[in-house]
Structure formats: structure tokens, C-alpha cells
Length: 373
Ligand SMILES: [Zn+2]
Picture 1 (cartoon, rainbow, N blue to C red):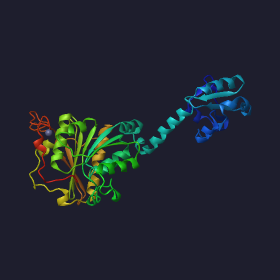
Picture 2 (cartoon, protein in one colour):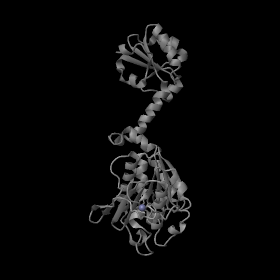
Picture 3 (cartoon, rainbow, N blue to C red):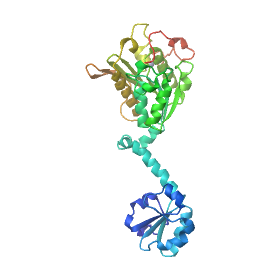
Picture 4 (tube, helix red, strand yellow):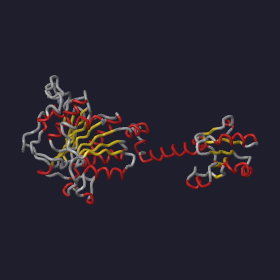
């Protein structure tokens, strides 16, 4: 079978896998105790120290493939065997190469439904694993976003939230559970994500986002998700992201309504282009005053998660220059088109008033109408 391979002495484990089992004998040259701890399936153990005596048992009409730990000692064995008339090869990189490559394969199995997609593939999955996303708020929106990004294998997820888990959160904040009541939301979220996907590194920030800390926080991330329901923080996220040239996805829910929009620098309006200023106290209720169906947070959070993944992979058409408005009672998705950025916008316009969120902290002071949901 191996006429075309006979000049070389090495085989990759993939080449070996393609060979017909019936015609080959795979030999593990490592010590028996190591062999029993784990070896390549189908290998027989003949430790190097007794190989000289034991090799006579090996059939001369079959191809002998030997391997050691790293593929160094096995090369000498191949030369010895060939001199004595066997058709022999050794595995390049030895057991370790097989183990590392095999571990990678197992890893990708988790993402096999991603890898099957032409738009993702192994390359896209590796991109996700190398990506960093900051989720602001581990509440109704942040919970599904963080869960789906973690399941998708976004390699680093930062979570900002100053609150602890309360009983009234559990109707929609599905990353937490009853046993975590009183625990910091960021710690509870981290625990859930680590159980779901150990490939993900979770960085926790048990603090409120402020004009002072936001710059340092968003700096190290590729994308930001706005999962808060107070306008001060929404405007703060917008302004800081615009000024830092950082893309983000806005999401909001109230009663049976939800909305999502994505900002990418240079591609359409920002949140302030559309909403201009923080609403006056009492003019817009929040979820703790008006209520919300929990699953509404799930739907809008999932749309935000999808936008994040699309941005990271560079696929599809993002919600830039348009907003999708979801009506849960009538089950409709409506698209509101905005087109370009507004030239008079105070942060992204032609003559911006806002140039540094730290210097203009007063803009984001609480109007006392909303809390993180
Ligand atoms: Zn703007």
C-alpha cells in the first residue's frame, strides 16, 4: 500500500489514519505505565528498552508504524527495522503531536454546527475564540447575550455590573439562579459561563460604569454590548464608544417593545444622533416601574448577540443606519431606517460639543429615573 511513501521514514498521524488497519501494526515505544495512562487507539506497547528482543514478534508482511513521545527515538527504531527487512515508518511529532492535534479536534467538535456554516468555518470559529467582547450589565439583556456569546466560543467576555442577584431578577436574568441570591451578578455570571464553556475567559468588573472608568474598560475589547436600561449609561456608552472609535450594539426593552441598533464608526448614526439627549425625569418609565415580560429580554438580547457575532465574523448586514423595533404582543419586527449620521450630532457630528466624557461627566449624572435591570 505504501509504495509512494517508501522513501520517507516519517508519517503524519493523519497519513497513518488513511492507511488500511489490516496491513499495519502501530507500536507505542513508551513505557507500559505511560501507555496504560493513554495512547493512540489501536497501538500495541513494546517499550524501547525491550524492543530489541520483542521486535521479532512483529510480522514482516505488514507495515510497522512506531511512535515515541516526541518522534525522536522512534526514528532510530525505523532505521533499525528497515535494515532488517521490515517496511517501517514512525509518526512525526510522536504521541504529543497526535494528542495536541486531537485535543484541537475535540475542541472544534463543540463548535461543529458553526464550522459547518460557510460563513463561519474553522477560520471563523478561531476568530471568535480570539475575540473580546465587553457586556455592560448582567441583567435581562446581558444574561442572554453573555450566555450565547460564551456558548459560541467568544474567547474573552468582560462583564460590568455593580449589583447583586435579587429574587425579582430571576424572572428574566437567566444567567443567574436561585442559589446565587445575594451574590454579585458578575460572579454569578462568571460561574455559569465557566460551567457552560471552559474555553471562555471571563473578566469581571463589579462596578458601575462611569465617565472616569469607561475609557479604560472598553479599550481592550473589540466590541461592546449595551445591556443597561438607564439612559445615563446608554448615552455614556454611546459617547465613549464614538470617541474611542469602538463599535457597540444598543438594545432596549420596555413592556412588550424592544429595539436594537448597532453602531460601527463611520457607518451610520450613533445613539445620540437619534435620541439626542437623556430624557427628562419621569418622561420614560423603566422596567422596574412599567414591567416587562422576561422573554422580551431574551429576544432582544439574542438579537444583540447575533449582531455581535456578525460583527466579529465580518458577515451579513448589521443594524447600522437602521433600528429594528420588535412588538412582542403583535409579533412584528419593524425596521426604522436612519441612513447617515446627523451632522449636528453633539458627539459624532461635524462640530462635536462632546470631546471627552471625563471632562463632561455632568452629562451622565443620574436623573433618578432608572436602574440597571
Ligand atoms: Zn451621532
